[in-house]
Amino acid sequence: MDAVTLIAFIVAGYAAFVTIAAALGVALRAPRPRWLDQLGWMLEILAVVLAIGALAAWSAGRKPESLSTFLGYLGALVCLMPLALQTMREDRSTWSSGVIAAAALATGVVAVRVMMVR
Image (cartoon, helix red, strand yellow):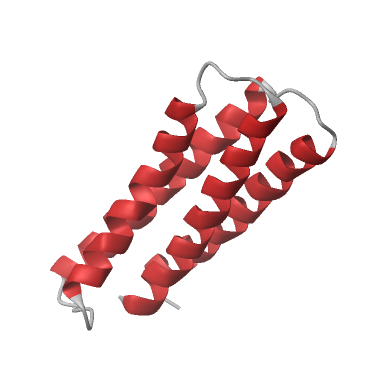
């Protein structure tokens, strides 16, 4: 197992953790806690590390079957969480946790897809 695959598994696992934490907040109908934002930003840092690793593997000669799909997944990977977190920056309601849950779930799925197409 190479390093990029390992990082992708870490991102997917952490994304599942953030999704569960955010969904629990929605289920409990609690206002979004500040620590959920921190979990989201940590997921973003991991996603950027995965994107850099995937780009490094690509530049080292590992060519994906579809370059446009690969680059699209990398773009989505690094844009999902910041968009969700910035959109919900001022809104601390219960449903803002749902937005974070959806973005974290999508980030995890895209991390797995990056691993599959590279």
